[in-house]
Amino acid sequence: MVENVKELLKLHEGITHEVYLDNENSSIVPQEVVDEMIPYFNKKAYGNPTLTTKPGWEAFEVIMNCFQEIGKTIGSKNLEDITFTPGETEANNQAIMGACFAQKSKGKKIIISEIEPINVLQVAEMMQKFGFSVTKIPVNKEGFVNLEKLKEAVDSDTILVSISAVNNEIGTVQPIKEAVDIVKDKNPQALFHSDASDAYGRIPLNVADLKLDLATISSYKIQGPRGMGAMYLREGVNMERILEGQIGTQKLWPGVENTPLIVGFTKASELAFQNFDRNVAKMRLLRDKLVDGIFGELNDLRFNGPKGDKRSPDNANISILRCEGEALTIELSLKGVYVSSGSACSRRLLQPSHVLIAIGRIFEEAHGSILMKVTRSLTEEDIAYVLEVLPTAVNRIRGIVGSTGVH
Amino acid sequence: MSRIPLPYNPKVMDLFRNPKNLGKMDDATVVAVAGNPACGDMITFYLKIDETKLIIEKAQFESYGCAANIATSSIVTEMVKGLTLEKAWEDITWKKVTEEIGGLPSVKFHCGVLAVGALKRAIRQYFTQKGIAPPIWMPADHTFEEKQALEEEELAKTLSKRLKVEEEKKAEK
Image (tube, rainbow over all chains, first blue to last red; front, side, top):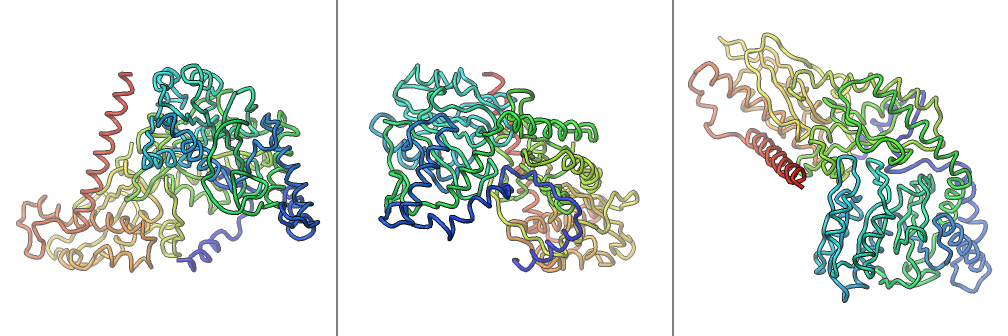
Protein backbone atom coordinates (compact mmCIF):
# COMPACT_ATOMS: atom_id res chain seq x y z
CA MET A 1 0.00 0.00 0.00
CA VAL A 2 2.96 2.30 0.57
CA GLU A 3 3.56 2.60 -3.17
CA ASN A 4 0.11 4.21 -3.47
CA VAL A 5 1.31 7.16 -1.45
CA LYS A 6 3.59 8.35 -4.26
CA GLU A 7 0.59 8.48 -6.59
CA LEU A 8 -1.55 10.13 -3.94
CA LEU A 9 1.03 12.83 -3.46
CA LYS A 10 1.36 13.29 -7.22
CA LEU A 11 -2.34 14.21 -7.31
CA HIS A 12 -1.46 17.19 -5.13
CA GLU A 13 1.05 18.58 -7.62
CA GLY A 14 0.29 22.08 -8.80
CA ILE A 15 -1.29 23.23 -5.54
CA THR A 16 -0.76 26.98 -5.38
CA HIS A 17 -1.60 27.61 -1.75
CA GLU A 18 -1.41 25.37 1.31
CA VAL A 19 -3.18 26.03 4.60
CA TYR A 20 -2.59 23.68 7.52
CA LEU A 21 -5.61 23.71 9.81
CA ASP A 22 -5.07 20.22 11.29
CA ASN A 23 -3.28 21.65 14.32
CA GLU A 24 -5.17 19.21 16.51
CA ASN A 25 -3.09 16.35 15.14
CA SER A 26 0.29 17.89 14.36
CA SER A 27 1.67 21.35 13.60
CA ILE A 28 4.14 23.29 11.50
CA VAL A 29 7.17 24.19 13.58
CA PRO A 30 8.20 27.81 12.91
CA GLN A 31 11.68 28.19 11.41
CA GLU A 32 12.77 30.19 14.45
CA VAL A 33 12.08 27.15 16.66
CA VAL A 34 13.84 24.76 14.27
CA ASP A 35 16.90 27.04 14.15
CA GLU A 36 17.03 27.05 17.94
CA MET A 37 17.02 23.24 18.08
CA ILE A 38 19.53 22.37 15.35
CA PRO A 39 22.80 23.11 17.23
CA TYR A 40 21.75 20.77 20.04
CA PHE A 41 21.93 17.73 17.76
CA ASN A 42 25.66 17.95 17.09
CA LYS A 43 27.19 21.31 17.99
CA LYS A 44 26.55 21.77 21.69
CA ALA A 45 25.07 20.12 24.76
CA TYR A 46 24.83 16.78 22.93
CA GLY A 47 25.91 14.87 26.02
CA ASN A 48 23.91 13.01 28.64
CA PRO A 49 23.03 15.56 31.35
CA THR A 50 23.80 13.14 34.19
CA LEU A 51 27.39 12.43 33.15
CA THR A 52 30.57 14.11 34.24
CA THR A 53 31.73 15.40 30.87
CA LYS A 54 31.64 18.86 29.32
CA PRO A 55 28.84 17.97 26.83
CA GLY A 56 26.95 16.43 29.75
CA TRP A 57 27.23 19.50 31.95
CA GLU A 58 26.25 21.67 29.01
CA ALA A 59 23.13 19.56 28.52
CA PHE A 60 22.41 19.71 32.24
CA GLU A 61 22.57 23.49 32.23
CA VAL A 62 20.29 23.82 29.21
CA ILE A 63 17.72 21.35 30.52
CA MET A 64 17.59 22.97 33.97
CA ASN A 65 16.95 26.29 32.27
CA CYS A 66 14.15 24.75 30.20
CA PHE A 67 12.48 23.28 33.33
CA GLN A 68 12.47 26.77 34.75
CA GLU A 69 11.19 28.50 31.61
CA ILE A 70 8.39 26.01 31.01
CA GLY A 71 7.48 26.09 34.71
CA LYS A 72 7.19 29.88 34.62
CA THR A 73 4.64 29.79 31.80
CA ILE A 74 2.21 27.79 33.95
CA GLY A 75 2.94 29.44 37.28
CA SER A 76 5.10 26.66 38.73
CA LYS A 77 8.17 27.82 40.65
CA ASN A 78 9.84 24.57 41.55
CA LEU A 79 12.11 23.01 38.88
CA GLU A 80 11.29 19.50 40.04
CA ASP A 81 7.58 19.96 39.48
CA ILE A 82 8.04 19.64 35.71
CA THR A 83 8.65 16.30 33.99
CA PHE A 84 9.36 16.27 30.27
CA THR A 85 7.69 13.34 28.51
CA PRO A 86 7.50 12.38 24.83
CA GLY A 87 4.11 14.07 24.54
CA GLU A 88 0.61 14.65 25.85
CA THR A 89 -0.26 10.95 25.65
CA GLU A 90 2.68 9.92 27.80
CA ALA A 91 2.15 12.74 30.30
CA ASN A 92 -1.52 11.78 30.71
CA ASN A 93 -0.59 8.11 31.12
CA GLN A 94 2.00 8.99 33.78
CA ALA A 95 -0.35 11.38 35.57
CA ILE A 96 -3.32 9.02 35.74
CA MET A 97 -1.64 5.65 36.20
CA GLY A 98 1.07 7.02 38.47
CA ALA A 99 -1.37 8.92 40.69
CA CYS A 100 -3.73 5.94 40.99
CA PHE A 101 -0.98 3.49 41.89
CA ALA A 102 0.44 5.91 44.46
CA GLN A 103 -2.98 6.57 46.06
CA LYS A 104 -4.40 3.05 45.88
CA SER A 105 -4.56 2.65 49.65
CA LYS A 106 -6.78 5.75 49.89
CA GLY A 107 -9.48 4.75 47.44
CA LYS A 108 -10.40 3.31 44.09
CA LYS A 109 -12.54 5.89 42.29
CA ILE A 110 -11.40 7.90 39.27
CA ILE A 111 -13.67 10.68 37.97
CA ILE A 112 -13.33 12.09 34.46
CA SER A 113 -15.60 14.05 32.15
CA GLU A 114 -17.21 12.14 29.30
CA ILE A 115 -15.47 14.34 26.73
CA GLU A 116 -11.88 13.77 27.84
CA PRO A 117 -9.38 13.11 25.05
CA ILE A 118 -8.82 9.41 24.42
CA ASN A 119 -5.42 9.49 26.12
CA VAL A 120 -7.26 10.29 29.35
CA LEU A 121 -10.45 8.31 28.68
CA GLN A 122 -8.78 5.07 27.66
CA VAL A 123 -6.09 5.24 30.35
CA ALA A 124 -8.75 5.74 33.03
CA GLU A 125 -10.77 2.84 31.59
CA MET A 126 -7.66 0.68 31.49
CA MET A 127 -7.20 1.27 35.25
CA GLN A 128 -10.37 -0.77 35.79
CA LYS A 129 -8.21 -3.82 35.12
CA PHE A 130 -6.30 -2.90 38.27
CA GLY A 131 -9.42 -2.64 40.42
CA PHE A 132 -10.10 1.08 40.03
CA SER A 133 -13.51 2.38 38.98
CA VAL A 134 -14.27 5.15 36.49
CA THR A 135 -17.14 7.61 36.79
CA LYS A 136 -17.84 9.86 33.82
CA ILE A 137 -19.42 13.26 34.41
CA PRO A 138 -21.83 14.34 31.68
CA VAL A 139 -21.57 17.62 29.81
CA ASN A 140 -24.24 19.92 28.41
CA LYS A 141 -24.83 20.76 24.75
CA GLU A 142 -21.88 23.13 24.68
CA GLY A 143 -19.58 20.68 26.39
CA PHE A 144 -19.51 22.26 29.86
CA VAL A 145 -19.05 19.75 32.65
CA ASN A 146 -22.06 19.41 34.93
CA LEU A 147 -20.67 20.68 38.24
CA GLU A 148 -23.67 19.42 40.22
CA LYS A 149 -23.01 15.90 38.99
CA LEU A 150 -19.33 16.33 39.78
CA LYS A 151 -20.20 17.33 43.33
CA GLU A 152 -22.47 14.30 43.70
CA ALA A 153 -19.80 11.98 42.34
CA VAL A 154 -16.91 12.99 44.60
CA ASP A 155 -16.80 10.85 47.73
CA SER A 156 -14.29 9.50 50.25
CA ASP A 157 -13.28 6.74 47.81
CA THR A 158 -12.31 9.28 45.12
CA ILE A 159 -8.57 9.49 44.54
CA LEU A 160 -8.33 11.31 41.21
CA VAL A 161 -10.40 13.70 39.11
CA SER A 162 -9.25 14.48 35.57
CA ILE A 163 -10.93 17.21 33.51
CA SER A 164 -9.31 19.01 30.58
CA ALA A 165 -9.08 22.77 30.95
CA VAL A 166 -10.07 23.18 27.30
CA ASN A 167 -11.69 20.43 25.27
CA ASN A 168 -9.48 19.43 22.34
CA GLU A 169 -12.31 18.94 19.83
CA ILE A 170 -14.89 21.63 20.55
CA GLY A 171 -12.81 24.21 22.44
CA THR A 172 -14.98 24.40 25.57
CA VAL A 173 -13.17 26.33 28.32
CA GLN A 174 -14.14 24.46 31.48
CA PRO A 175 -14.69 26.18 34.85
CA ILE A 176 -11.61 24.43 36.26
CA LYS A 177 -11.25 26.63 39.32
CA GLU A 178 -14.82 25.93 40.42
CA ALA A 179 -14.36 22.25 39.66
CA VAL A 180 -11.20 22.05 41.77
CA ASP A 181 -12.92 23.85 44.66
CA ILE A 182 -15.89 21.48 44.50
CA VAL A 183 -13.63 18.43 44.54
CA LYS A 184 -11.35 19.67 47.33
CA ASP A 185 -14.32 20.80 49.39
CA LYS A 186 -15.79 17.31 49.40
CA ASN A 187 -12.53 15.40 49.58
CA PRO A 188 -9.32 17.35 50.22
CA GLN A 189 -7.28 14.18 49.61
CA ALA A 190 -8.54 13.65 46.05
CA LEU A 191 -6.07 14.76 43.41
CA PHE A 192 -7.07 17.00 40.51
CA HIS A 193 -5.42 16.52 37.12
CA SER A 194 -6.10 18.67 34.09
CA ASP A 195 -4.95 18.00 30.56
CA ALA A 196 -4.18 21.60 29.69
CA SER A 197 -2.67 20.89 26.26
CA ASP A 198 -5.41 22.84 24.50
CA ALA A 199 -5.51 25.60 27.10
CA TYR A 200 -1.77 26.24 27.08
CA GLY A 201 -0.97 29.35 25.06
CA ARG A 202 -4.67 30.08 24.52
CA ILE A 203 -6.14 31.01 27.89
CA PRO A 204 -4.38 32.21 31.06
CA LEU A 205 -3.27 29.17 33.00
CA ASN A 206 -1.73 29.18 36.46
CA VAL A 207 -1.42 25.87 38.27
CA ALA A 208 -0.92 27.58 41.65
CA ASP A 209 -4.02 29.80 41.32
CA LEU A 210 -6.09 26.88 40.08
CA LYS A 211 -4.70 24.67 42.89
CA LEU A 212 -4.06 21.87 40.44
CA ASP A 213 -2.16 18.80 41.62
CA LEU A 214 -1.32 17.61 38.14
CA ALA A 215 -1.39 19.10 34.66
CA THR A 216 -0.37 18.09 31.15
CA ILE A 217 0.93 20.32 28.37
CA SER A 218 2.05 19.47 24.85
CA SER A 219 4.75 20.90 22.61
CA TYR A 220 3.18 20.54 19.18
CA LYS A 221 -0.02 22.16 20.34
CA ILE A 222 1.95 25.39 20.68
CA GLN A 223 3.81 24.87 17.38
CA GLY A 224 6.76 23.19 19.06
CA PRO A 225 8.28 19.93 17.83
CA ARG A 226 6.24 16.69 18.09
CA GLY A 227 7.45 14.07 20.54
CA MET A 228 7.62 16.41 23.51
CA GLY A 229 5.29 17.39 26.32
CA ALA A 230 5.38 17.91 30.03
CA MET A 231 3.61 16.91 33.20
CA TYR A 232 3.32 19.27 36.14
CA LEU A 233 3.18 17.64 39.57
CA ARG A 234 2.63 19.76 42.66
CA GLU A 235 5.39 19.38 45.23
CA GLY A 236 4.53 16.90 47.95
CA VAL A 237 2.02 14.85 45.95
CA ASN A 238 2.77 11.13 45.95
CA MET A 239 3.44 9.72 42.53
CA GLU A 240 4.67 6.41 41.15
CA ARG A 241 6.75 6.00 38.03
CA ILE A 242 5.09 4.01 35.26
CA LEU A 243 8.30 3.30 33.32
CA GLU A 244 11.50 1.83 34.71
CA GLY A 245 15.04 2.35 33.48
CA GLN A 246 18.01 4.61 33.95
CA ILE A 247 16.92 7.68 35.91
CA GLY A 248 18.60 10.94 34.89
CA THR A 249 17.51 14.48 35.71
CA GLN A 250 13.86 13.42 36.11
CA LYS A 251 12.71 11.16 38.91
CA LEU A 252 9.50 10.22 37.11
CA TRP A 253 10.71 9.60 33.57
CA PRO A 254 13.70 7.32 32.88
CA GLY A 255 15.80 7.39 29.73
CA VAL A 256 18.14 9.90 28.14
CA GLU A 257 16.74 13.44 27.99
CA ASN A 258 16.05 14.64 24.45
CA THR A 259 17.80 18.01 24.63
CA PRO A 260 16.96 19.31 21.11
CA LEU A 261 13.25 18.64 21.56
CA ILE A 262 13.23 20.11 25.07
CA VAL A 263 14.92 23.23 23.67
CA GLY A 264 12.41 23.40 20.80
CA PHE A 265 9.46 23.07 23.16
CA THR A 266 10.88 25.82 25.37
CA LYS A 267 11.47 28.13 22.40
CA ALA A 268 7.93 27.49 21.13
CA SER A 269 6.54 28.36 24.55
CA GLU A 270 8.65 31.54 24.65
CA LEU A 271 7.12 32.60 21.31
CA ALA A 272 3.61 31.71 22.44
CA PHE A 273 3.88 33.65 25.67
CA GLN A 274 6.03 36.69 24.84
CA ASN A 275 3.09 38.28 23.00
CA PHE A 276 0.34 36.25 24.58
CA ASP A 277 -2.50 38.77 24.18
CA ARG A 278 -1.56 39.63 20.63
CA ASN A 279 -1.28 35.94 19.69
CA VAL A 280 -4.67 35.16 21.18
CA ALA A 281 -6.28 38.14 19.44
CA LYS A 282 -4.81 37.02 16.12
CA MET A 283 -6.08 33.47 16.54
CA ARG A 284 -9.52 34.73 17.48
CA LEU A 285 -9.65 37.09 14.49
CA LEU A 286 -8.65 34.36 12.02
CA ARG A 287 -10.95 31.78 13.58
CA ASP A 288 -13.93 34.14 13.51
CA LYS A 289 -13.29 35.07 9.88
CA LEU A 290 -13.12 31.38 9.03
CA VAL A 291 -16.33 30.46 10.84
CA ASP A 292 -18.30 33.52 9.68
CA GLY A 293 -17.12 32.94 6.13
CA ILE A 294 -18.22 29.29 6.12
CA PHE A 295 -21.62 30.11 7.61
CA GLY A 296 -22.01 32.90 5.03
CA GLU A 297 -21.37 30.54 2.12
CA LEU A 298 -23.09 27.30 3.12
CA ASN A 299 -26.31 26.16 4.71
CA ASP A 300 -27.25 23.10 6.77
CA LEU A 301 -24.37 23.51 9.20
CA ARG A 302 -24.07 22.98 12.95
CA PHE A 303 -21.58 24.87 15.05
CA ASN A 304 -20.18 22.48 17.65
CA GLY A 305 -19.25 23.82 21.09
CA PRO A 306 -19.75 27.20 22.76
CA LYS A 307 -19.33 30.64 21.24
CA GLY A 308 -17.64 33.70 22.73
CA ASP A 309 -15.15 33.88 25.60
CA LYS A 310 -15.85 30.36 26.81
CA ARG A 311 -14.42 28.91 23.62
CA SER A 312 -10.73 28.51 22.90
CA PRO A 313 -9.69 31.24 20.40
CA ASP A 314 -8.16 28.80 17.90
CA ASN A 315 -10.90 26.19 17.64
CA ALA A 316 -13.55 25.81 14.93
CA ASN A 317 -15.66 22.65 14.74
CA ILE A 318 -18.51 22.52 12.26
CA SER A 319 -20.83 19.70 11.20
CA ILE A 320 -21.64 19.94 7.53
CA LEU A 321 -24.81 18.00 6.91
CA ARG A 322 -25.13 15.75 3.84
CA CYS A 323 -21.36 15.79 3.50
CA GLU A 324 -19.33 12.85 4.76
CA GLY A 325 -16.23 14.03 6.63
CA GLU A 326 -13.53 11.69 5.36
CA ALA A 327 -14.47 12.37 1.74
CA LEU A 328 -14.32 16.11 2.46
CA THR A 329 -10.87 15.94 4.08
CA ILE A 330 -9.54 14.29 0.91
CA GLU A 331 -11.31 16.73 -1.41
CA LEU A 332 -9.88 19.66 0.57
CA SER A 333 -6.41 18.11 0.69
CA LEU A 334 -6.34 18.03 -3.10
CA LYS A 335 -6.83 21.81 -2.94
CA GLY A 336 -4.13 22.32 -0.28
CA VAL A 337 -6.43 22.78 2.72
CA TYR A 338 -5.72 20.33 5.54
CA VAL A 339 -8.37 19.58 8.17
CA SER A 340 -9.51 16.55 10.17
CA SER A 341 -12.93 15.00 10.68
CA GLY A 342 -14.87 13.35 13.48
CA SER A 343 -16.24 10.80 11.04
CA ALA A 344 -15.89 7.11 11.89
CA CYS A 345 -16.21 5.77 8.40
CA SER A 346 -15.10 2.35 9.32
CA ARG A 347 -17.46 -0.46 10.00
CA ARG A 348 -15.56 -2.23 12.72
CA LEU A 349 -14.81 1.01 14.50
CA LEU A 350 -18.28 2.38 14.05
CA GLN A 351 -17.68 5.19 16.49
CA PRO A 352 -17.62 8.79 15.43
CA SER A 353 -16.20 11.43 17.79
CA HIS A 354 -17.30 10.60 21.36
CA VAL A 355 -17.17 14.31 22.16
CA LEU A 356 -19.76 15.22 19.51
CA ILE A 357 -22.00 12.36 20.59
CA ALA A 358 -21.68 13.48 24.24
CA ILE A 359 -22.92 16.99 23.40
CA GLY A 360 -25.97 15.45 21.73
CA ARG A 361 -25.02 15.45 18.07
CA ILE A 362 -26.55 12.57 16.12
CA PHE A 363 -24.27 10.20 14.20
CA GLU A 364 -24.88 11.89 10.83
CA GLU A 365 -23.81 15.22 12.33
CA ALA A 366 -20.65 13.69 13.75
CA HIS A 367 -19.75 11.97 10.45
CA GLY A 368 -19.98 15.31 8.68
CA SER A 369 -17.91 17.25 11.18
CA ILE A 370 -14.65 18.98 10.45
CA LEU A 371 -12.19 20.26 13.04
CA MET A 372 -10.00 23.23 12.21
CA LYS A 373 -7.53 25.00 14.47
CA VAL A 374 -5.82 28.21 13.51
CA THR A 375 -2.39 29.38 14.71
CA ARG A 376 -0.89 32.84 15.01
CA SER A 377 1.34 31.96 12.03
CA LEU A 378 -1.56 31.89 9.57
CA THR A 379 -2.61 34.98 7.63
CA GLU A 380 -5.88 36.51 6.50
CA GLU A 381 -4.94 35.47 2.95
CA ASP A 382 -4.78 31.86 4.16
CA ILE A 383 -8.30 32.09 5.56
CA ALA A 384 -9.54 33.77 2.37
CA TYR A 385 -8.10 30.86 0.38
CA VAL A 386 -9.89 28.31 2.59
CA LEU A 387 -13.14 30.19 2.10
CA GLU A 388 -12.55 30.19 -1.64
CA VAL A 389 -12.15 26.40 -1.96
CA LEU A 390 -14.26 24.99 0.87
CA PRO A 391 -17.77 25.70 -0.50
CA THR A 392 -16.89 24.14 -3.88
CA ALA A 393 -15.49 21.07 -2.14
CA VAL A 394 -18.57 20.69 0.07
CA ASN A 395 -20.91 21.12 -2.88
CA ARG A 396 -19.13 18.44 -4.89
CA ILE A 397 -19.34 15.92 -2.04
CA ARG A 398 -22.97 16.85 -1.41
CA GLY A 399 -23.60 16.30 -5.11
CA ILE A 400 -22.49 12.65 -4.79
CA VAL A 401 -24.97 12.15 -1.96
CA GLY A 402 -27.76 13.39 -4.21
CA SER A 403 -31.11 12.09 -3.08
CA THR A 404 -29.68 9.31 -0.92
CA GLY A 405 -32.13 10.19 1.81
CA VAL A 406 -29.68 11.85 4.18
CA HIS A 407 -31.23 14.58 6.22
CA MET B 1 -11.63 7.45 17.73
CA SER B 2 -8.97 5.23 16.22
CA ARG B 3 -7.07 6.38 13.23
CA ILE B 4 -5.39 4.25 10.59
CA PRO B 5 -3.35 5.25 7.55
CA LEU B 6 -5.44 5.13 4.37
CA PRO B 7 -3.15 5.20 1.34
CA TYR B 8 -5.81 4.92 -1.36
CA ASN B 9 -4.59 3.72 -4.76
CA PRO B 10 -4.84 5.79 -7.97
CA LYS B 11 -7.97 4.00 -9.22
CA VAL B 12 -9.86 4.68 -6.02
CA MET B 13 -8.77 8.30 -6.17
CA ASP B 14 -9.75 8.60 -9.82
CA LEU B 15 -13.24 7.24 -9.21
CA PHE B 16 -13.57 9.41 -6.11
CA ARG B 17 -12.66 12.51 -8.11
CA ASN B 18 -14.52 11.60 -11.29
CA PRO B 19 -17.17 9.05 -10.37
CA LYS B 20 -18.72 7.23 -13.30
CA ASN B 21 -22.49 6.67 -13.49
CA LEU B 22 -23.20 9.08 -10.68
CA GLY B 23 -26.67 10.44 -10.06
CA LYS B 24 -30.32 9.61 -9.80
CA MET B 25 -31.82 7.57 -12.67
CA ASP B 26 -35.36 8.68 -13.47
CA ASP B 27 -36.31 5.68 -15.60
CA ALA B 28 -34.78 3.03 -13.35
CA THR B 29 -36.44 -0.38 -13.36
CA VAL B 30 -35.42 -0.94 -9.78
CA VAL B 31 -33.90 1.15 -6.95
CA ALA B 32 -32.24 -0.29 -3.83
CA VAL B 33 -30.61 1.31 -0.82
CA ALA B 34 -27.99 -0.23 1.47
CA GLY B 35 -26.38 1.12 4.60
CA ASN B 36 -27.40 3.91 6.87
CA PRO B 37 -26.30 7.52 7.25
CA ALA B 38 -25.69 6.83 10.94
CA CYS B 39 -22.86 4.52 9.84
CA GLY B 40 -21.55 7.24 7.58
CA ASP B 41 -22.06 4.76 4.78
CA MET B 42 -25.09 4.62 2.50
CA ILE B 43 -25.52 3.70 -1.16
CA THR B 44 -28.47 4.02 -3.54
CA PHE B 45 -28.34 1.80 -6.61
CA TYR B 46 -30.42 2.34 -9.76
CA LEU B 47 -30.69 -0.41 -12.38
CA LYS B 48 -32.21 -0.09 -15.83
CA ILE B 49 -33.09 -3.64 -16.88
CA ASP B 50 -33.93 -4.97 -20.33
CA GLU B 51 -36.87 -7.02 -19.16
CA THR B 52 -37.08 -9.40 -22.07
CA LYS B 53 -33.43 -10.47 -21.94
CA LEU B 54 -32.98 -9.80 -18.21
CA ILE B 55 -29.87 -7.76 -18.96
CA ILE B 56 -28.66 -4.75 -16.97
CA GLU B 57 -28.62 -1.95 -19.55
CA LYS B 58 -27.14 0.58 -17.20
CA ALA B 59 -26.54 1.19 -13.53
CA GLN B 60 -26.18 4.42 -11.59
CA PHE B 61 -25.49 5.26 -7.97
CA GLU B 62 -25.56 7.93 -5.32
CA SER B 63 -23.58 7.61 -2.15
CA TYR B 64 -23.11 9.14 1.27
CA GLY B 65 -19.75 7.89 2.42
CA CYS B 66 -15.99 7.98 2.30
CA ALA B 67 -13.79 7.95 -0.81
CA ALA B 68 -13.69 4.13 -0.84
CA ASN B 69 -17.47 3.95 -0.62
CA ILE B 70 -17.86 6.32 -3.58
CA ALA B 71 -15.22 4.55 -5.66
CA THR B 72 -16.49 1.00 -5.05
CA SER B 73 -20.09 2.01 -5.79
CA SER B 74 -18.95 3.60 -9.02
CA ILE B 75 -16.92 0.61 -10.13
CA VAL B 76 -19.79 -1.80 -9.47
CA THR B 77 -22.00 0.26 -11.80
CA GLU B 78 -19.31 -0.17 -14.46
CA MET B 79 -18.83 -3.88 -13.84
CA VAL B 80 -22.50 -4.84 -14.17
CA LYS B 81 -23.24 -2.94 -17.36
CA GLY B 82 -24.43 -5.38 -20.08
CA LEU B 83 -24.47 -8.41 -17.78
CA THR B 84 -27.49 -10.67 -17.40
CA LEU B 85 -28.99 -10.55 -13.92
CA GLU B 86 -27.77 -14.11 -13.39
CA LYS B 87 -24.20 -13.29 -14.38
CA ALA B 88 -24.20 -10.12 -12.26
CA TRP B 89 -25.49 -12.10 -9.31
CA GLU B 90 -22.89 -14.81 -9.65
CA ASP B 91 -19.85 -12.89 -10.79
CA ILE B 92 -19.90 -9.71 -8.76
CA THR B 93 -18.58 -10.43 -5.29
CA TRP B 94 -16.95 -8.01 -2.87
CA LYS B 95 -13.61 -9.76 -3.43
CA LYS B 96 -13.89 -9.21 -7.16
CA VAL B 97 -14.79 -5.55 -6.65
CA THR B 98 -11.82 -5.05 -4.33
CA GLU B 99 -9.60 -6.71 -6.92
CA GLU B 100 -11.02 -4.66 -9.78
CA ILE B 101 -10.39 -1.44 -7.91
CA GLY B 102 -6.77 -2.41 -7.28
CA GLY B 103 -7.09 -3.19 -3.59
CA LEU B 104 -8.42 -1.36 -0.55
CA PRO B 105 -7.07 -0.79 2.95
CA SER B 106 -8.49 -3.68 5.00
CA VAL B 107 -10.70 -1.43 7.13
CA LYS B 108 -12.37 -0.33 3.89
CA PHE B 109 -13.29 -3.83 2.63
CA HIS B 110 -16.78 -3.25 3.98
CA CYS B 111 -17.28 -0.49 1.38
CA GLY B 112 -17.03 -3.07 -1.42
CA VAL B 113 -19.24 -5.41 0.58
CA LEU B 114 -21.89 -2.73 0.95
CA ALA B 115 -21.77 -1.81 -2.74
CA VAL B 116 -22.30 -5.45 -3.74
CA GLY B 117 -24.97 -5.76 -1.04
CA ALA B 118 -26.85 -2.89 -2.69
CA LEU B 119 -26.53 -4.52 -6.12
CA LYS B 120 -27.78 -7.91 -4.91
CA ARG B 121 -30.58 -6.27 -3.04
CA ALA B 122 -31.61 -4.48 -6.25
CA ILE B 123 -31.59 -7.70 -8.27
CA ARG B 124 -33.58 -9.57 -5.62
CA GLN B 125 -35.97 -6.67 -5.40
CA TYR B 126 -36.58 -6.78 -9.15
CA PHE B 127 -38.19 -10.21 -8.91
CA THR B 128 -40.19 -9.35 -5.79
CA GLN B 129 -41.37 -6.13 -7.36
CA LYS B 130 -42.52 -7.88 -10.52
CA GLY B 131 -44.12 -10.70 -8.57
CA ILE B 132 -41.99 -13.21 -10.47
CA ALA B 133 -40.81 -16.35 -8.70
CA PRO B 134 -37.09 -16.03 -8.00
CA PRO B 135 -34.92 -17.90 -10.54
CA ILE B 136 -33.06 -21.02 -9.47
CA TRP B 137 -29.72 -19.26 -9.39
CA MET B 138 -30.95 -16.93 -6.67
CA PRO B 139 -30.80 -18.56 -3.23
CA ALA B 140 -33.66 -17.86 -0.83
CA ASP B 141 -31.09 -17.10 1.87
CA HIS B 142 -29.27 -13.81 1.83
CA THR B 143 -25.77 -13.78 0.38
CA PHE B 144 -22.78 -12.71 2.46
CA GLU B 145 -22.95 -9.13 1.18
CA GLU B 146 -26.69 -8.79 1.78
CA LYS B 147 -26.25 -10.14 5.31
CA GLN B 148 -23.46 -7.66 5.96
CA ALA B 149 -25.58 -4.76 4.72
CA LEU B 150 -28.38 -5.86 7.03
CA GLU B 151 -25.99 -6.26 9.92
CA GLU B 152 -24.63 -2.76 9.38
CA GLU B 153 -28.14 -1.31 9.27
CA GLU B 154 -29.09 -3.17 12.44
CA LEU B 155 -25.96 -1.95 14.17
CA ALA B 156 -26.80 1.62 13.23
CA LYS B 157 -30.30 1.18 14.60
CA THR B 158 -29.01 -0.27 17.86
CA LEU B 159 -26.49 2.52 18.27
CA SER B 160 -29.03 5.21 17.46
CA LYS B 161 -31.47 3.65 19.90
CA ARG B 162 -28.84 3.52 22.60
CA LEU B 163 -28.03 7.13 21.89
CA LYS B 164 -31.68 8.08 22.13
CA VAL B 165 -32.04 6.32 25.47
CA GLU B 166 -29.00 8.18 26.76
CA GLU B 167 -30.42 11.44 25.43
CA GLU B 168 -33.69 10.82 27.21
CA LYS B 169 -31.86 9.94 30.40
CA LYS B 170 -29.94 13.17 30.07
CA ALA B 171 -33.14 15.14 29.51
CA GLU B 172 -34.67 13.59 32.64
CA LYS B 173 -31.66 14.60 34.65
